[in-house]
Length: 186
Image 1: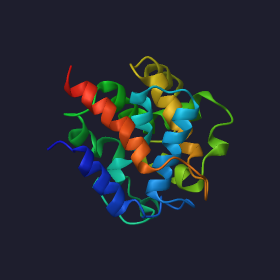
Image 2 (image 1 turned 60 degrees about the horizontal axis):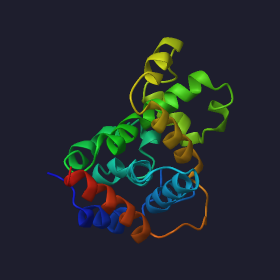
Image 3 (image 1 turned 135 degrees about the vertical axis):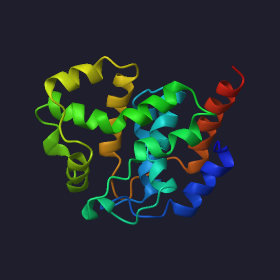
């Protein structure tokens, strides 16, 4: 079943106030901050949409607050894809799918990156398979959309700032709607 724009709005309205896994922001605040950082970074509409929607799997597969403390990896990077695939292009779907592996890659290729991770990101990293080997990182970097996933990952890591002003959900759903319309007419 494909998610409509109204379905996406409803998910954020219904569950967006949930805490974002041990961080000082809600799920909605995290999504909006990710979108704002993507916009500020000059991303195209597809990557902005990916930034806003990258953690939608958490809202579709509710595991309670901070599931990593209970040893749960909710596989959120995959969970939303069947619902999004009918209405979005690969340029949205692949950065979402790859954003967890992008964290694993960045830990392998950037000596300072691991030290910047929040406590929950460190816990989830272990549950998600740990830091990539050099070979795994090299293979990841060859994938289509790997660079977009790395950009998304860095915005994801920064989108945890308490009381950070951002455009509202309607603003980003407008971007998402443009991408959906383009995809459905091609």
